[in-house]
Image (tube, rainbow, N blue to C red; front, side):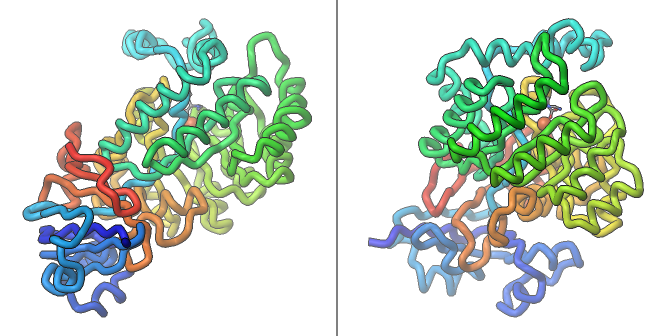
Length: 422
Ligand code: NIG
Ligand code: FE
């Protein structure tokens, strides 16, 4: 028997298919440009068969072809809206320990660098993560994935990088892989041995270790898809970062770069030069950086939660959008940026970075999928797309950023199965 799901009578379904195609079907709302680009259907239904969207459009024709009473999962979405599941393209969601005291320290005026110098920050999480067993790490990650799913995320990237030695980095990737098997949320694994320099080590010496020891082992383990580096003043400079990313590329991992988060040192240009899938953070990017990313098709991934948590100035999202970049947003969920919610990132992206709600939805679905090199229909609800969607307890998708601090997600379908209900 084929497994089907029908979500019907929705006030609106946002497909994110192109405006022309949506109009071609005759049901698209005649809204403003932004609405057309989103492919919005009103009084709509979506049917999912064998994990993929089989039909989307007006409720009448869709439910005649796919009667809800015959479906495995039927969701009456009267008065509610439906969007593609969020793709969160940048997280450090696997770790042990608690750093809530650092949140208080930052409120009392300490900077992220002060905290690092006092033994806090990334290296503190490294100590806790090395000490934790695999089962504890797995439980931690599964718990965070539950929270993400409840907030509408159906695909998430998770980085290693709290091991900083071969054994723990491999252990982290193994746990990420097991979580992907065990949890409905799709998990995309990234190796980030170059997340920080371990205690008592020289940077160049540690870069040698990452390149000569960690990357070959990660390659034979065969889990990581991307290789990321913290290209930052006082961490890895551009040349050290380039060595790591080139070695990662030779081992089959696509580069990603943490660039210009705390200072401008050239990580964005490096991302363009090595053909990275994305350059992330970009709080201090210049006009030349923006042009280089657009020209080389590197997705700028902006992380408004990080700026919020650091009390820092936000990335200049408008500069990227005006230059024609396909801007993505992510949570950057980590012990220093403690939010698993793409809805909160969307609110910040609108209020603090000037995205429209439509731009923020595109940034957290299709553009986020592009930052992870996922197939083009991920983050959309067209025929053939994965049946990954969120039903919002709200009449329009605009309520995601508008209803800030509140989770608008009522139900989530992954591959056409209802995997969460509020
Ligand atoms: O993306 N910038 C480097 N890494 C993280 C912070 C990790 C941590 O503080 O534990 C980030 O913000
Ligand atoms: Fe990060």
